Image: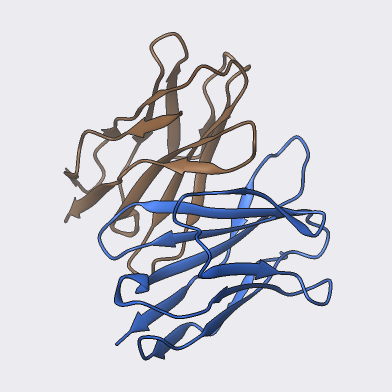
Length: 114
Length: 113
């Protein structure tokens, strides 16, 4: 069964550094998402992406964040200058529009900012 | 704006018994989707069950079923014959017209052997 994959599974970085989180969505999916879950809190929507552009973003998704789909398969989330409060689990999800309307989640990347 | 509320931060159930997790939501939309996701200690988000708002029939997936009350904006999850592997965090979620999913704060379910 096809699945969403994410790399790395765990990323440790120093405050102020740039990080890129990578996701490979399911191949025939058209919509892509990033979510964040700070430890012990609920999962929060960050951004949705369709047709090579951002379709929706939350107030969390400020100028420090960016997304792109550089090669038609990968979907990346970049944090330009990480802050301690960026430490969280980041989930990628993809959706193939259709009757199922199910977003398939990746296993997540745990980001630790020290 | 849509909101999802899970009023039970934690629940416990004896193995083989039945447990119901509560969820309410608020929306002005008439067509939407509701989900229950399971998050085990591995923190992977696993879809348990989904419900289309236009369907009156409650969704069922093996031991998991929902009680969807559209007028009351209620969407509870019933787990029958609870198993140790059901222990996890359960999130109720609403899918809005713009495709993003709004999650509740979660209910941590403990299974007592």
